[in-house]
Image (tube, rainbow, N blue to C red; front, side):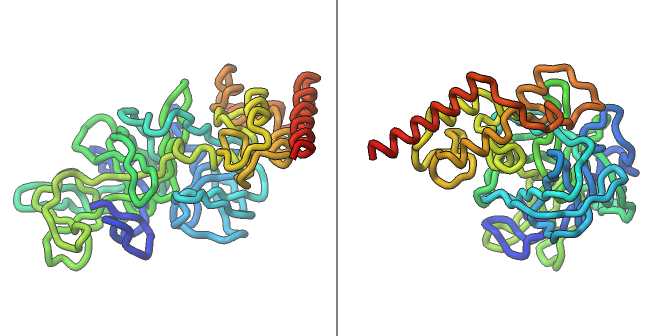
Length: 378
């Protein structure tokens, strides 16, 4: 059975679960509590509420809606404390963008591959909380896994993305907790919600998901509470089906992260408004797309409706123009250059809006001419 973390209601086949907090690793009883040599998202994942969040733009971090939070509360990243200023929830998902007071020195590039293209790729998970093995969970002579220990703190694990599932209308990456040695095979435990799931593409570890949930196992049909444990062998254990009946568990525990690729347009509309082709950079291609659809109603973001108001108009054009030339790490501009670790996270052109070229200015005038002609013809 698959369950949501922190949610106060039952949703479809999913039941109430406690918050995740850090990853338990199959063959590392005391967990990994230091950054990997190549970081893998470690330095870009901070502490928020009773979980985590990942810096993704100079003034924004991404986290899980179900963690809650209010303006003025603290987000701690790499030893620095920032305060939350405002929130933007991504409709139809558990994602929440939090704008901060201040500026991050660096932030994570986003995974910009096609939705569901993550299948089969290694993933790195960063979280906070209970990472050590507790007492073994056994059924007869079979060991099923371990109870969550009491040791807590920032930690790291690996896994492999199985694919993408749709649960209650949300797109989620999923992966199982398997008895694999030598690969730091891990799964979420209590409090990991909001932390980052990262995939290496183009030589960089990019944010591909925000930690969301784990499956919920029971020891026996009459057990009043779920086992607070990480399970790699479900033999002898039971789960509840969508009708509330106990059925035999058939496999290991699964973890779920809200997929970034499925919601990249909504994310970009907040942190990089005007990037209508979602390549991480606002350039002539975006401007041309907007011009081609100028005046249309009921368009998509990818057709130029930057503010999602149901039409491509002057407001969208102005927003794009104000951010023209900006890019985020992992975007078209950043990917084409050799970027040192120290420079990752900086806006191209130091965050300023470049002056449009003469041709770009002419296109802006052309779009405005189209607008005037359409109003005259009407």
